[in-house]
Amino acid sequence: MIIIGELINASRKAIGAAIEAGDAEAIQKVATDQAEAGANFIDVNAGIFVGKEPEYLKWLVQTVQAVTDVPCAIDSPDPKAIEAALEVHQGTPMINSISLEKERYENLMPIIAGTDMKVIALCMSDEGMPETVEDRMKIADKLVNGLLQNNVKMENIFVDPLVQPLSVNNTFGMEFINSIEQIVETFNGIHTACGLSNISYGLPGRKYVNRAFMIQAIAKGLDGAIVNPLDKGMMGAIVTAEALAGKDNFCMNYLKAFRGGLLDG
Image (cartoon, rainbow, N blue to C red):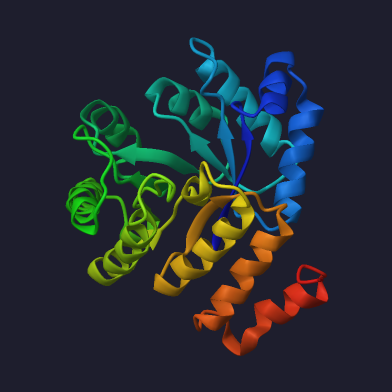
């Protein structure tokens, strides 16, 4: 599982305040905590700062990379902000995310084309949010083929079928999970990813919904997620689900997690 640590997001009150104050120490603590907990990428988002996003996103990348070698997932639809962040990023980042929305697609594709950057391809178009497997597959097909035609390697593409709240429609959980299965079967070598916690929006006991949903999605082929790596319950669910799905030879990762205390209690 590719873990994209979600905690450095300006929409979180403490993070937004730290960015505005230039509090590098606070940001670096969150970055190192996530890296030590197993994050493969550190998501950085400064989207609430209209007019200052390029400046702040660049600062976030520099601040995070001063204390960890874990690459960043540069989280913005703004090409100027992404370009500013890329100026200073060391190593190979992830772009979060391109979609089929015309303006976003046309602005971001020139930045991504022909590079080795990882990219999240979000199943969203100008027609709105997809609700069914068929809707998602139509968008995914155009996005994946567009990226391939622009010399982005299949193994660098992470399709996000877009999680929508179960509280809004009781089909949204299975439509997403079945989309994961269809994407993996259709595009050989593709990755998948999602912002999983949207599934439980508006519900009590969200952590239980999130963990059960993660387990089901992994069984269908999900291999990337934007999550809080400090959530031991979620990380334990991930390592257990991957073992059960046959993705952990001799249960070595499971045993390592157990010995490391991740599965306590």
